[in-house]
Length: 535
Image (cartoon, rainbow, N blue to C red; front, side):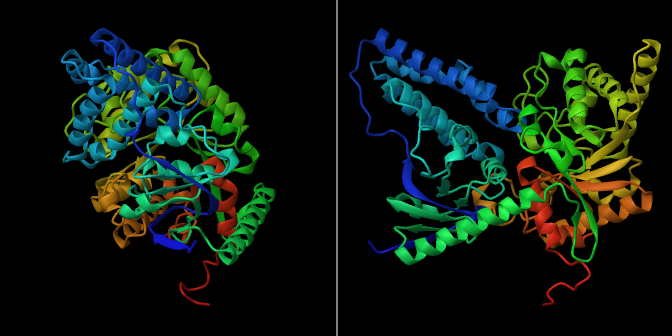
């Protein structure tokens, strides 16, 4: 066979070789059709099994990973999803045909939506469709893949990625997708090589594949010379990774001696097991999106979760973000249903201030946990200084109540995330104790390009001069105020972006625990005293 090379976009660096596993809708499968009652029962049972499988997967995950596929569970629990299919079954249509037709209509609606967020979630609908079809036909989940397999698909939902055991190796090649999508972030965090944006060429991928997530290409039937070169590169990549892990406890100093703090992002207990607390300089972002509708009012449960994190950090600073619900992270009864553009709607601090009784429960738990060590509270999606002032008012009231209740507490540092361009340009006006730049949202808002939009992936670039100018402005504002500033977005763990971020004045990066060793290694390679472009 003559090798073929197809170019795409780099989404997660590294090399992977293995057999292609094509992930398409199960168009060729068939089953014997029963009576209307039997078809109705078959579809109901398949939906229930798919719902149970998604719920089981969510239970095995933490934080962002669980939140990403909570959307699928919400859909599977909504009877409206199956109404059209059951109506067709009543007219004599087979269960699988009725389901596919109903889902085709749903998917088309998402794909034609004006809002990029809804278009991006079409892949979740396709994943739901295929899950139910597999259960109708009694087929195994496609998480059971050959060791080191390369998943080939038009697009990939986060739930499909999370259902695969990547410890065996493997890679991903997608016809669509974006380097800034949620599934790309998951791939980078787990070191899974990934190329997206291959176009219609993905349909011709088969046999043995080489995925080069650094050079943004997929090679079909690589020749012996390329295979040998790839194996040498893989060995070198593994050697450098092992060296980075061996040095992960050392400080991150550039070649010219500039110290850079490297902290970790924590989404739940599983993240605490990935890297030892002693390897980092603290926790730069602890997400609290694990809070469900039931936990929003449970101060003790929240306090226990925060206390566990403080004990793990062992005296290192811990920054905990207040509930960042809304957008792609709905909470029934708390977030707003049916927003036309959820990413520009009621999110983060906007929702917290709308639900002060719930906000104060979280502030009470956080203030109590602050008695255990250096805890910092971070407010998400802040747009104007009035929101910070209002939040401080709630904190002061909470501290007064805790004193009256004779509970141990301490006043935490109170800072904000900078992810709204208006806030970035007015950073000097915020009397916050610290700033943390959320590059994911800042970039998508500044470039008017959704992080999940394949068509606009090239626009959503943190290295855009406008985005870098805003980051540099925030750094200057922080220095003028004498407060710390860090980056906790995806760009902090992107070794290709780190040089520009440090040259913009950033001196603290917070990354996924699995990326900490390589981020420290990348920092050690830089010489900030040397002009850009010099040899």
